[in-house]
Length: 419
Ligand code: HAM
Figure (cartoon, rainbow, N blue to C red):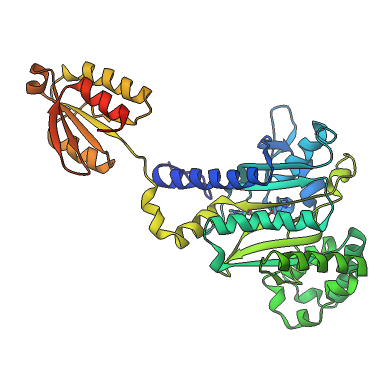
């Protein structure tokens, strides 16, 4: 049976790369004083109506919702920010470490999208949420963290950081009014999605891949016309700070993000002109709207699959290093060898070495082939002759050197690592 459409299994090399990348991301976030948070995969589905937003594609058409056996309406989380904010409020995390709270997370997310390269129905997100600091420095520090991830994974050369300011909620309301008025004239020419957007959130028409290519799009009102001087000043300060930190960006007036909770700064790191690896922005009203205390916040999320895909393309020379390393492969050529081997493996495993043994099909050829496949460093053979002489045959598979010695001396030497 195949896995469900849009999902996939992780094992062997891909699993190793995945884990290594996640560890790297966690390490960088900790370096920026973030702590890990884990929230449930299932939440009440209306959590997302009230946060991610009724007008977002995610809530409109991509959410996996179901009734549980107690008739509760639940959802598999389509993103992790809403759950983190819910947790921030329901655990009263606010007030515990005034005034800043910085959390990173990693876990599965689910969206009923059309599967294609870099787009899955079950995927993994890593993200950060920074609560309690409304300054432009917090904006820039958050982008700097995302930028560190890009640099650490050696993706800089093909990344474009796009930034925009979508203003406060009242400015956005004003802008939406202008857009609604303008696009209503072209309603018949809008794509099906944008017809709905016209009603719910006209700003989303701006990042529509279909309608943005149409002629009437060129004279649409621009966001800047609706921003107050304060919002523009704030944005300019952020841009100046990015310049100071030598973080390259492009301003993109059409960048509005697909989730409803954002205000002011929004940003995306786009790889190779194809897909967004990292997306985020400020969301200063969400905690309050979800019945918590007024708390400014900013964060971003990234898709692990997309980051891995980009990492593999840009770092092909490193990929060979991702393999399960085995230190010692044992081979028993007669059944009486195995009790001795099991004891020896226990000793060396306790000392932190990776040992394995083929208990069946143990002829020399198979054992040697296996040892080479798992890239073992040592091959230890115990056959009739060795058993009789209370010795083992050891082959260093890197140098090719072979010798016969006692098992005890091999163990002592290899633990001392001066073998
Ligand atoms: P988002 O832009 O919806 O934002 O998703 C963030 C990232 O998740 C995307 O840039 C992409 O790399 C990845 N992603 C999204 N959908 C898929 C998919 N179907 N398959 C694979 N990867 C995907 C958020 O989710 C916000 N919570 C980000 C955020 C955090 N904003 C503030 N804090």
